[in-house]
Length: 106
Length: 127
Image (tube, rainbow over the protein chains, first blue to last red):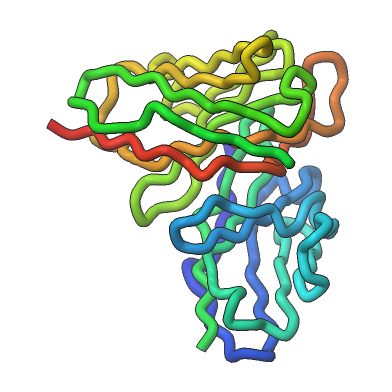
């Protein structure tokens, strides 16, 4: 099975835009999903099917896809967005997670 | 509202066994796939297994195939993970999660994602 590659860390100042990428060979033909996980808490789905936002997730969270890379964008980052972010996809019925990206709000 | 509550975690010696349970409520359990995901201390998420609504479709991740067994009891709204031959690197928080299965043809689906998660139960494998 293939891997999903994320940068280990991203830093951004409050009010700025954070972009977190996830790369994988199968992403042109498979959807990606994004989860937010704060310390000591369970993950929360923030984006599904590359670009869709679940109800209750703020509009500042958005997703996009281009070729083998999907991107989670957080516009107008707030302190409460500091968390780990994981992409997820599927390969031949196996569920894969990226290694995770720690978003630090400076 | 959807609730998933794990139990059964604890300290176990290397080579030992443990059975995790997940009690589900707030939705029609028998209509949904269910699964397990774990997270080692300070590490990322790792998918372990999922089971279809009726139990006929089961998949495991490579790291636990042959050592872990997933099962469910729809009459009790419960999901289980039986773990054997536990190793130190199985130490993790184990999450029960509900995968949504999309783009399905018969028993085969091409898309899965987790829309609800429990709070997790810690399993520590140490002598």
